[in-house]
Image 1 (cartoon, one colour):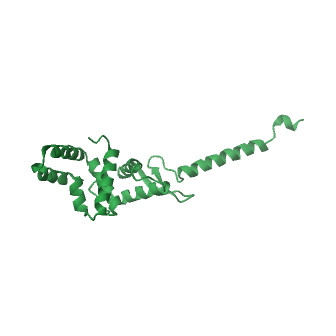
Image 2 (spheres, helix red, strand yellow):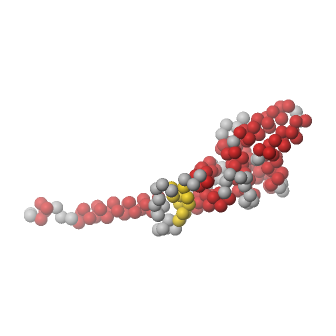
Image 3 (cartoon, helix red, strand yellow):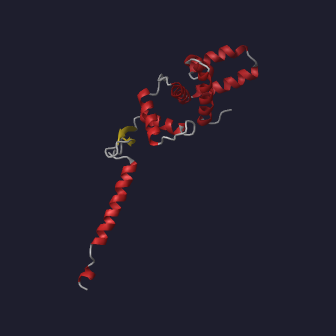
Length: 185
């Protein structure tokens, strides 16, 4: 039984990639993997004539998918990213998905498709829930996630550089200042 989202994502990315390699269409892949609840229901009916053990394990998996729209969204995003098809099921804005993914890719070009998927999905969720938005840094022009409650015009890297420069300037200023007792010596 699948224990978490990561396991589900990893299995489906591999399966969808294999199917696309052999020319499977979006409809075929979504039906086979049960991406949408209605497809999952169709699969249940279609598989009723098959052996009980196989149907049981398939049904348990599809129940897991049905239990939450989050699973469906993850699987649709997985498919869209693998196939280049930008259609998604309801619940996640395509523009937000693309912005979030390009943001993560630009922040970390060596991103691993499997390991960083959860991080990417959490960013999409935050963008969708309007708790954060993607904007460009005014200094380096790189994209970054800004919280709506705490807005800054600089990305975290530039803020760190600014703070480091401010500390250096403060130390230099202190070293340049002469102490009162040195004046009277």
